[in-house]
Length: 422
Image 1 (cartoon, rainbow, N blue to C red):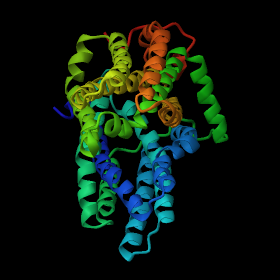
Image 2: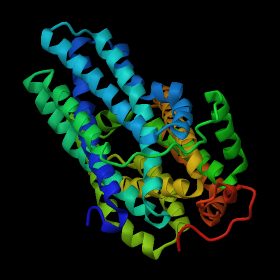
Image 3: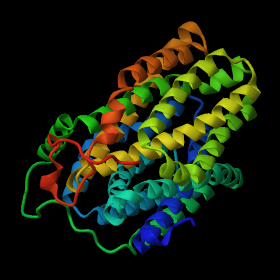
Image 4: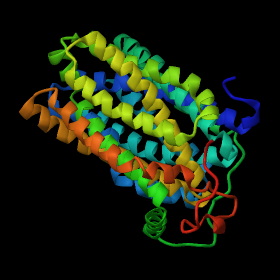
């Protein structure tokens, strides 16, 4: 069953809203670069479109988490989606009237990305508020599966097809998806702020409070560091994957497209098996297996010269990457008190995107100097060293006590209790 009855009606509304929003984002994933490339041949301006996907997270990520913890999270998602809809509708009007230019497109991308930071941060806090701790794994699996199907499979081909018909058509459909997602999330009953409404303090004070909690909570802190480090090593070769595929493997543009599709297929398969795995294995060995596969994946890509082999490797990358993402999110949500979910989620996301920026910058320099396979060797060495360092701490992450319904019981200095999964 896609949405088990035990997860409740509110989860079904959240799931439907997430899937609908991901269709719109998937459409833009293909259409936005095509639009920018149709307006300019400047590599810097084309690259700016990609950079604007990450920049808002680095600028506003921590603030979004603090605001999500002090205001109504459901209303933040609704307001953010409304702003996204207005921005894209404005872009559609510029395109239809023929007055759009590269500056308008990049400005729209930045504003849209900023709204997305607040939407995604707030949305991550809703699932722990509506399902039991033991159902977080299933809930995250369903949300991630929707991302794979809608954002990675259905959206991009549809976006490219509509762009070929007319530049404004994919963005018009994206507006409709955003508005529908807004309508669906509005069906969820209002959520109360997790903070005392009479407690007024500066946002940076809230951010500092979250960072202090994270600094004292070793299991969650270690998990965030693992995610940051592995995103740096992963992004180094991923940023130049197109060059690796076309120049080193001689796969061509179509083969490069198949590489990313292979990862999505693997992830979709993993989404079908997650429930079975969660019932039979502890998260600790699963996390170690996923990170070991990451190390071996980098080594395999560094050694192979065959496109078919690369497709097989990428398929298995999709499998373990999906499992790792679902497990790490579930573990974090179980360990973090409800009133801190937004701030800790935002720190995690800043680490993710910060790691991507650092990794891609390193990968570009390494590939420029030593060739397209060099970033894979860098990633292999970095991931292997990191894995050796975190192998034992993973046990303490999983052994840490899940969050309770009483904030005073969530003191990170209290000895850990029951494991997260058995």
